[in-house]
Figure 1: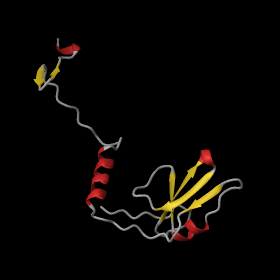
Figure 2: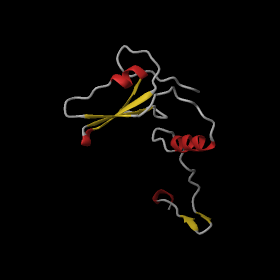
Figure 3: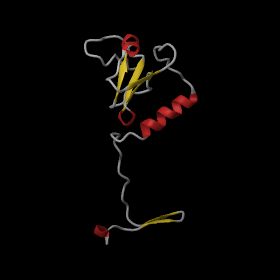
Length: 118
């Protein structure tokens, strides 16, 4: 399912084309191309807000050189592989426990019964 991401700025309904990330250790705001997926500590921005962003006094803004473009969804095998790996590594993904069947042997590994099974 294709999701459409909107600008994070309050009241803005434009499509997001850039991602803003703060690097607090360096007092830097980084505005780059739209990230492949929404991250909790970054902000999606429309073209207008990405170009007009200013940082607090003493901070530096590092901005992507060039025009921001709407995301192009690719069917590239490498992109598909990266998405599959990201999905497999999600923490909130439900994991089914392996069935406990007692003592068994598989290759060079041996399954020992737990304390409740002895």
